[in-house]
Amino acid sequence: MFQVRIHGRGGQGVVSAAEMLSIAAFEEGKHSQAVPSFGSERMGAPVVAYVRIDDEEIELREPVLDPNLLIVQDPTLFAAIDVFAGLKDDGYVLINSNKSLEELGITEATNKLPEGHVVTVAATELAMKHLKRPTPNTVLLGAFTAMSDTLQIDSVCDAIMRKFPGKVGEMNVVAARAAYQAATAA
Image (cartoon, rainbow, N blue to C red; front, side, top):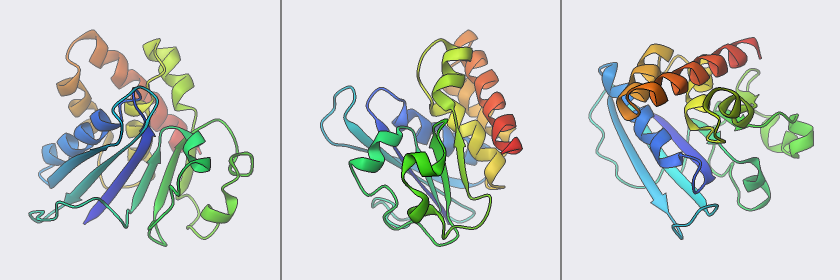
């Protein structure tokens, strides 16, 4: 089972990102589950969502405690909570930032991971360029598909279009594909 934990803040589309990942997995014939977790439901408050993807039926319903992948939509959370708790030794980390790991202060937490398993993408900047809004969720989903063979970019783009039909979806797909290219080059 491939388990994802998405960390962000209210208004960044954390719950929507989990839903779209789950839909993309389902479109590829896999079993999937998206589970949101809210604290105080307000703009800017920390939000976590979980995704499970498997070839078999998923019966778990609890939070993801040992993720294969962490998606961090807001790097200010590194100072607020232990984002890396439970991350598997061969796990992946995808961070919305244009800063280096040293600048983010997370080299100690990430240096044990295999090469290529930690990627930073300036997702907010890509979102502003393509969407004119600072919502990094779909951008990071595109980058994720470049890091792992768990899901394909086309499935993620189809899930984005299902969530956001029309022009909004098309703009999000362009942003996701741009992030895919950026993460592939990383």
